[in-house]
Image (cartoon, rainbow, N blue to C red):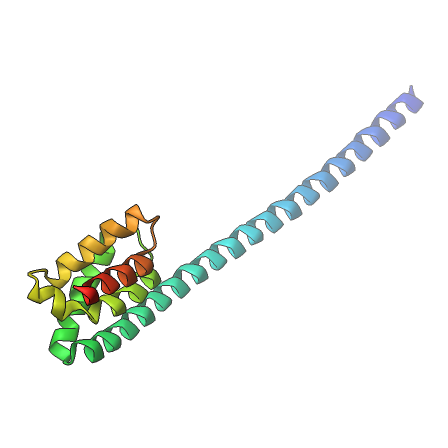
Length: 150
């Protein structure tokens, strides 16, 4: 009977040690997963912040370009306001809009002489871009080429 009691105690003790090792290993895995999750959260936040900064820089560059193309700070600011309002309502990327707007700005005066405001010019170009597969810059260039010929 003493031998059975000794075996039971040893078996229970070894089972307890194994369970403690498994729990310690699980705690390490949990810690690693938690750290990895935090790293991904940090990485995601960094990407979001970088995207916001890049968008801000693009808008700033576009504002400078529009001031130069429209010939005054007031007209450039008005055009930038129109473009940002347009960009918020379209599926086009800001960089693609920026590429196209510079082409449209060069013919904005001609479009106005035909009764087309800059805002309408953006909308028409956006609709054309959708028909051409979603490239606003390409549609802008084609629209500009067409207006130059008129």
